[in-house]
Length: 331
Image 1 (cartoon, one colour):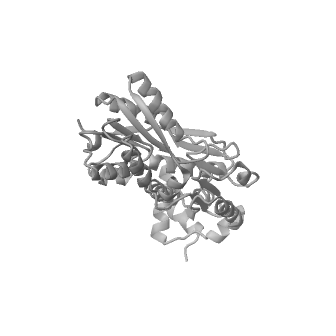
Image 2 (cartoon, one colour):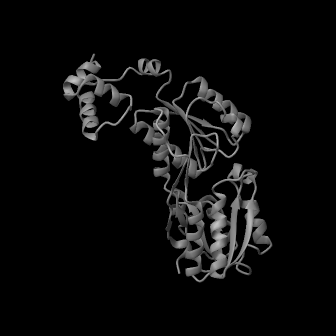
Image 3 (tube, one colour):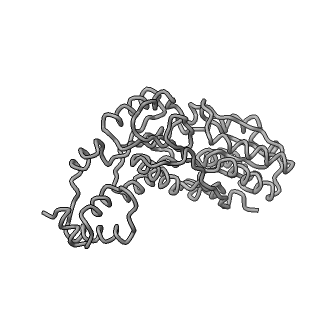
């Protein structure tokens, strides 16, 4: 069975250098990493995970807590985080809390008992107290905790701004915003702020509808949308465009409106947010704000590993968004 000394000899590097590469410690050139990777494949070498864990009193596992695995955004994010972690020699321990506060508290404790290297948290209901004295890096996605090590989010305000500018350029003047869904102040709330402020500058009127946490938790907005349609608040009589804070809301609006004979985009134009797979699969396909989900995942894993190595990391990272134009706003 091959040893680390065999890998060092095959790659032409020192044993200490190979060890640093296997443990993701310090700066290592990509050339050296590739030499070690090639040598490991040739020799069929597998690092001793138990020994690595004992030496650092931790293991190469990242705890990942999400509120839902069925939501298109979280499904995509989980996949990208797993890929990013795997690239760095880590695996993920996934917890689906279903937005249950008690379960999320339990899962934080589970992460601690499993001696994870750190936690990536995608939740609106975990409290600051849950994270106090946790002892490992915590990276929050789309939420800012003062007790977290760092947070990663997209430029939500600019996303709302881009949506409003696009709809104004399409000739829209009467907008409906469907968003919200959390009882806690979230970075995603800036989507609405950016949209409303830009509409005001463009001379567009706005009707804002806030969804409930229960609707968000169920991922079902049909009852709310149909109620708005019954009142003509979401119909061509009162609006000419819809900005939804997620592709899921946008897709359900298109479904319900189309069943009532409302034509998208001829009667009402629709813009979503996230750019998940649902946006391209809908008919018509949904114009949306592209969240850099892969980059968010990679940055979260990068910050966690750096923080676990006692390196200084920024408290907050904001990544850019862009508009993706599809058929739901075609002129």
